[in-house]
Image (tube, rainbow, N blue to C red; front, side):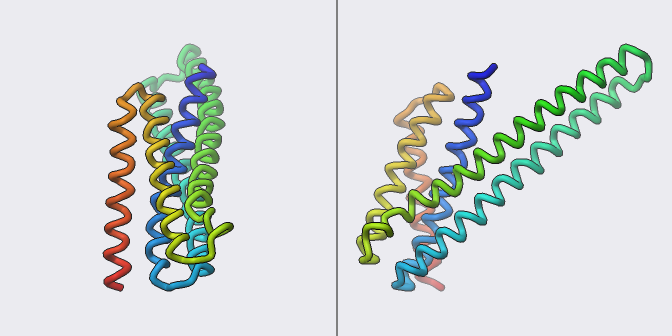
Length: 186
């Protein structure tokens, strides 16, 4: 059971990092044409933080709502106030508390992962001041991480590592192309 929870947390973390990378790629490309590394840094960090908070909130609210929907459905299905039914409901309350803790943990891990993904994308700004070189380094880091995350997710879910790594990079490339097109139009 502990291993299963750890795998779930790792999947949430990987999902969060992937989200942070893809969102930050869009922000990076969108601000690249401003010509300012300061604007790029500010927008990617602010966007990464906002996305992180959004992921935590969305995961928490969505999963909690689904949990309570299932509980109410079970209560309706039981529909009795006899001793056996009340014991089942008490048991469910304990399960709900456990599940709520897990939801909090997964939401936090997802949100933190999102912000970390954004930090990875913009991290070259610490070492590179030329905006073209910064963009190139950020892209290389992003695609390396997307490929690695694809491998980790594939390993956890017993899928083909190369196939999922390639899919993650293709998703990154599509994000890059679409955001570039929008940035050039705007």
